[in-house]
Image (cartoon, rainbow, N blue to C red; front, side):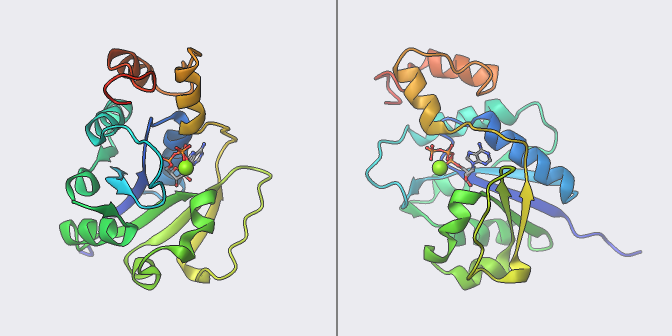
Length: 201
Ligand code: ATP
Ligand code: MG
Protein backbone atom coordinates (compact mmCIF):
# COMPACT_ATOMS: atom_id res chain seq x y z
CA UNK A 1 0.00 0.00 0.00
CA UNK A 2 1.39 3.37 -0.95
CA UNK A 3 1.37 5.89 1.83
CA UNK A 4 0.16 9.38 0.95
CA UNK A 5 2.51 12.13 2.06
CA UNK A 6 0.90 14.60 4.41
CA UNK A 7 0.30 18.00 2.87
CA UNK A 8 0.78 20.89 5.28
CA UNK A 9 0.08 24.55 4.65
CA UNK A 10 2.22 27.04 6.54
CA UNK A 11 0.77 30.49 7.15
CA UNK A 12 3.34 32.78 8.71
CA UNK A 13 2.42 36.23 9.90
CA UNK A 14 2.66 38.84 12.58
CA UNK A 15 -1.05 38.34 13.30
CA UNK A 16 -1.30 41.62 15.19
CA UNK A 17 -4.22 40.94 15.12
CA UNK A 18 -5.20 37.90 13.02
CA UNK A 19 -8.14 38.83 10.75
CA UNK A 20 -10.58 37.26 8.32
CA UNK A 21 -8.28 38.01 5.37
CA UNK A 22 -5.74 35.56 6.84
CA UNK A 23 -8.41 32.98 7.61
CA UNK A 24 -10.12 33.13 4.21
CA UNK A 25 -6.76 32.84 2.45
CA UNK A 26 -5.75 29.82 4.55
CA UNK A 27 -9.13 28.17 4.04
CA UNK A 28 -9.05 28.71 0.28
CA UNK A 29 -5.52 27.33 -0.12
CA UNK A 30 -6.41 24.39 2.14
CA UNK A 31 -9.28 23.53 -0.17
CA UNK A 32 -7.52 24.13 -3.52
CA UNK A 33 -4.38 22.18 -2.54
CA UNK A 34 -6.23 19.49 -0.55
CA UNK A 35 -4.09 20.19 2.51
CA UNK A 36 -4.37 17.93 5.56
CA UNK A 37 -3.51 20.78 7.91
CA UNK A 38 -2.71 24.48 7.90
CA UNK A 39 -0.25 25.58 10.58
CA UNK A 40 -0.38 29.25 11.56
CA UNK A 41 3.02 30.44 12.71
CA UNK A 42 3.03 33.80 14.52
CA UNK A 43 6.39 35.49 14.04
CA UNK A 44 8.83 36.21 16.80
CA UNK A 45 10.62 39.42 15.92
CA UNK A 46 9.95 40.01 12.22
CA UNK A 47 13.07 41.51 10.64
CA UNK A 48 10.89 43.26 8.04
CA UNK A 49 9.15 45.31 10.72
CA UNK A 50 12.00 46.42 12.98
CA UNK A 51 10.79 49.90 13.83
CA UNK A 52 7.19 49.07 14.34
CA UNK A 53 5.81 48.46 17.79
CA UNK A 54 4.49 44.95 17.81
CA UNK A 55 2.24 43.40 20.44
CA UNK A 56 3.65 40.88 22.86
CA UNK A 57 4.17 37.50 21.11
CA UNK A 58 1.95 35.73 23.68
CA UNK A 59 -0.98 38.02 22.82
CA UNK A 60 -0.47 37.41 19.09
CA UNK A 61 -0.13 33.68 19.69
CA UNK A 62 -3.29 33.50 21.82
CA UNK A 63 -5.36 35.56 19.35
CA UNK A 64 -4.26 33.13 16.64
CA UNK A 65 -5.31 30.18 18.80
CA UNK A 66 -8.69 31.79 19.53
CA UNK A 67 -9.27 32.55 15.82
CA UNK A 68 -8.39 29.06 14.58
CA UNK A 69 -9.72 26.89 17.44
CA UNK A 70 -12.99 25.90 15.75
CA UNK A 71 -11.37 24.61 12.55
CA UNK A 72 -10.21 20.98 12.86
CA UNK A 73 -7.50 21.38 10.21
CA UNK A 74 -6.07 24.67 11.52
CA UNK A 75 -3.29 24.51 14.11
CA UNK A 76 -0.88 27.04 15.63
CA UNK A 77 2.87 26.61 16.07
CA UNK A 78 5.06 28.34 18.65
CA UNK A 79 8.20 27.61 16.58
CA UNK A 80 8.91 31.24 15.69
CA UNK A 81 7.93 32.89 18.96
CA UNK A 82 9.99 30.41 20.98
CA UNK A 83 13.10 30.86 18.80
CA UNK A 84 15.26 33.74 20.03
CA UNK A 85 16.19 36.54 17.64
CA UNK A 86 14.70 37.69 14.37
CA UNK A 87 12.27 35.47 12.48
CA UNK A 88 13.38 34.19 9.08
CA UNK A 89 11.13 32.02 6.92
CA UNK A 90 14.03 29.65 6.25
CA UNK A 91 14.23 28.88 10.01
CA UNK A 92 10.46 28.38 10.22
CA UNK A 93 10.42 25.94 7.32
CA UNK A 94 13.51 24.09 8.55
CA UNK A 95 11.92 23.61 12.00
CA UNK A 96 8.63 22.37 10.54
CA UNK A 97 10.48 20.06 8.15
CA UNK A 98 12.47 18.63 11.05
CA UNK A 99 9.25 18.00 13.01
CA UNK A 100 7.53 16.27 10.08
CA UNK A 101 10.18 15.15 7.55
CA UNK A 102 7.68 13.14 5.52
CA UNK A 103 5.29 16.00 4.84
CA UNK A 104 5.10 18.33 1.84
CA UNK A 105 5.05 21.96 2.95
CA UNK A 106 3.11 24.72 1.21
CA UNK A 107 4.05 28.20 2.36
CA UNK A 108 1.09 30.54 2.04
CA UNK A 109 1.84 34.19 1.57
CA UNK A 110 0.09 37.34 0.47
CA UNK A 111 1.01 39.08 -2.74
CA UNK A 112 2.83 41.86 -0.89
CA UNK A 113 5.20 39.48 0.85
CA UNK A 114 5.69 37.35 -2.25
CA UNK A 115 6.96 40.30 -4.18
CA UNK A 116 9.71 40.79 -1.57
CA UNK A 117 10.64 37.13 -1.47
CA UNK A 118 13.91 37.57 -3.33
CA UNK A 119 15.15 39.88 -0.59
CA UNK A 120 14.68 37.16 2.03
CA UNK A 121 17.50 35.17 3.61
CA UNK A 122 18.36 31.75 2.08
CA UNK A 123 15.92 32.04 -0.85
CA UNK A 124 17.29 28.96 -2.57
CA UNK A 125 16.84 26.83 0.51
CA UNK A 126 13.27 27.98 1.15
CA UNK A 127 12.16 26.93 -2.32
CA UNK A 128 13.63 23.50 -1.63
CA UNK A 129 11.79 23.23 1.67
CA UNK A 130 8.35 24.34 0.48
CA UNK A 131 6.14 25.07 -2.45
CA UNK A 132 5.04 28.71 -2.33
CA UNK A 133 1.41 29.73 -2.73
CA UNK A 134 0.84 33.41 -3.36
CA UNK A 135 -2.67 34.60 -2.66
CA UNK A 136 -3.85 37.53 -4.71
CA UNK A 137 -7.06 39.45 -4.81
CA UNK A 138 -9.12 39.44 -8.01
CA UNK A 139 -7.95 42.22 -10.28
CA UNK A 140 -4.51 42.49 -8.68
CA UNK A 141 -1.72 41.61 -11.09
CA UNK A 142 1.39 40.14 -9.57
CA UNK A 143 4.89 40.32 -10.96
CA UNK A 144 6.57 36.98 -10.36
CA UNK A 145 9.64 37.59 -12.49
CA UNK A 146 12.73 36.28 -10.77
CA UNK A 147 10.84 33.64 -8.81
CA UNK A 148 11.34 29.96 -9.73
CA UNK A 149 8.48 29.01 -12.05
CA UNK A 150 7.72 25.62 -10.54
CA UNK A 151 8.22 26.85 -6.98
CA UNK A 152 5.29 29.27 -6.85
CA UNK A 153 1.58 28.99 -7.57
CA UNK A 154 -0.71 31.98 -7.51
CA UNK A 155 -4.31 31.63 -6.54
CA UNK A 156 -7.05 34.19 -6.26
CA UNK A 157 -8.93 34.51 -2.99
CA UNK A 158 -12.18 36.43 -2.58
CA UNK A 159 -11.55 40.16 -2.25
CA UNK A 160 -10.67 40.95 1.35
CA UNK A 161 -9.53 44.50 1.90
CA UNK A 162 -8.63 43.77 5.51
CA UNK A 163 -5.22 44.41 7.04
CA UNK A 164 -3.94 44.22 10.59
CA UNK A 165 -2.72 47.79 10.25
CA UNK A 166 -6.25 48.97 9.53
CA UNK A 167 -7.64 46.92 12.44
CA UNK A 168 -5.11 48.47 14.85
CA UNK A 169 -5.86 51.97 13.56
CA UNK A 170 -9.58 51.39 14.01
CA UNK A 171 -9.23 50.11 17.56
CA UNK A 172 -6.91 52.98 18.51
CA UNK A 173 -9.51 55.43 17.18
CA UNK A 174 -12.35 53.71 19.05
CA UNK A 175 -13.81 52.28 15.82
CA UNK A 176 -15.29 48.79 15.36
CA UNK A 177 -13.43 45.69 14.17
CA UNK A 178 -16.46 43.42 14.45
CA UNK A 179 -16.67 41.12 11.40
CA UNK A 180 -13.15 42.07 10.28
CA UNK A 181 -11.69 39.74 12.93
CA UNK A 182 -13.36 36.74 14.62
CA UNK A 183 -15.66 37.58 17.56
CA UNK A 184 -13.27 36.01 20.07
CA UNK A 185 -10.47 38.23 18.81
CA UNK A 186 -12.63 41.37 19.24
CA UNK A 187 -13.20 40.27 22.83
CA UNK A 188 -9.53 39.42 23.38
CA UNK A 189 -8.47 42.87 22.12
CA UNK A 190 -10.95 44.49 24.52
CA UNK A 191 -9.97 42.30 27.45
CA UNK A 192 -6.29 43.29 27.25
CA UNK A 193 -6.87 46.78 25.86
CA UNK A 194 -4.61 46.06 22.89
CA UNK A 195 -3.87 48.94 20.50
CA UNK A 196 -5.22 51.49 22.97
CA UNK A 197 -2.22 51.68 25.26
CA UNK A 198 -2.94 48.47 27.18
CA UNK A 199 -0.21 45.99 28.08
CA UNK A 200 -0.09 44.67 24.53
CA UNK A 201 0.67 48.26 23.35
P1 ATP B 1 0.14 44.47 8.71
O1 ATP B 1 -0.91 45.39 8.21
O2 ATP B 1 0.52 44.70 10.13
O3 ATP B 1 1.31 44.31 7.79
P2 ATP B 1 -1.19 42.14 7.61
O4 ATP B 1 -2.66 42.35 7.57
O5 ATP B 1 -0.43 42.32 6.33
O6 ATP B 1 -0.57 43.03 8.78
P3 ATP B 1 0.47 39.98 8.39
O7 ATP B 1 0.43 39.28 9.71
O8 ATP B 1 1.59 40.92 8.10
O9 ATP B 1 -0.94 40.74 8.22
O10 ATP B 1 0.31 38.97 7.20
C1 ATP B 1 0.55 37.59 7.25
C2 ATP B 1 0.37 37.02 5.85
O11 ATP B 1 -1.01 37.17 5.44
C3 ATP B 1 1.19 37.74 4.78
O12 ATP B 1 1.64 36.78 3.86
C4 ATP B 1 0.20 38.68 4.14
O13 ATP B 1 0.55 38.97 2.82
C5 ATP B 1 -1.09 37.86 4.20
N1 ATP B 1 -2.30 38.69 4.24
C6 ATP B 1 -2.52 39.79 4.98
N2 ATP B 1 -3.74 40.31 4.77
C7 ATP B 1 -4.33 39.52 3.83
C8 ATP B 1 -5.63 39.53 3.17
N3 ATP B 1 -6.54 40.47 3.43
N4 ATP B 1 -5.89 38.56 2.28
C9 ATP B 1 -4.94 37.61 2.02
N5 ATP B 1 -3.72 37.53 2.59
C10 ATP B 1 -3.41 38.48 3.50
MG1 MG C 1 1.60 42.81 6.16
